[in-house]
Image (tube, rainbow, N blue to C red):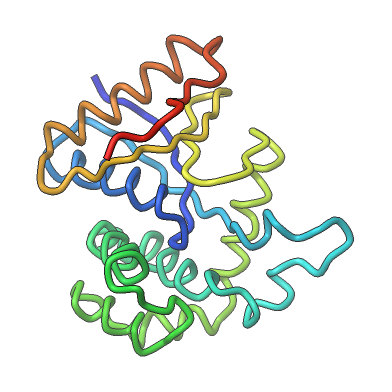
Length: 200
C-alpha cells in the first residue's frame, strides 16, 4: 500500500535533515511512498508582524538561495532531486557550509550530476522564489504549519523531531517514517509526546 504524504523542509534545520534523510533513504530502498516535498522558510516564520517579508529582501536571508536551488531541481530535474536534497543538507550540517555561498551550492549540484548554470539561470528568472513563497503561505494558511519538518496527510499535520539519522539502513528509515505516519493518521488525539531526557 502506497503511503501518500507531504513533508516540509528548510535546509538550515538539523531536525529537518534527520527526517528527510529517513524519507530519502527509505524511498531509495524501495519504500512505497508518494512524497510531496514542501518548501518552508524558517526565516519568514520568524518575521515579526509588520516586518518585511523575507521574499522582499531575499539577499538578507541565509536560507533562500539553497531552497530555491532545491526547488528548481525538484520541479525541473526530479530524477536528481533526492541526491541534491541530501547533498544540500550535508553541506550545511555535515560540512558546516554556508547556504548563501553560490560556489558551495554549485559544487553540490555538480557532484549530483546537475548543471549548476542551468539551476542558477532558473533562480535568476524569479519563478523559484515565487513558488517557494506560494508553498510556504499555502501550508501556513491550510494547515497552520509553523516549522520543519512537518508531516502532512490530508487535513492532519504534525511537527516531528527525530533524534537519529538512518545511515544506509533503508529498513530502519522506512520503519521510522511509517511509525510517524501511523501516529499522524491513526492517533490524532496524541498532541504531544516528548521524552524528558535525551539518550546519548
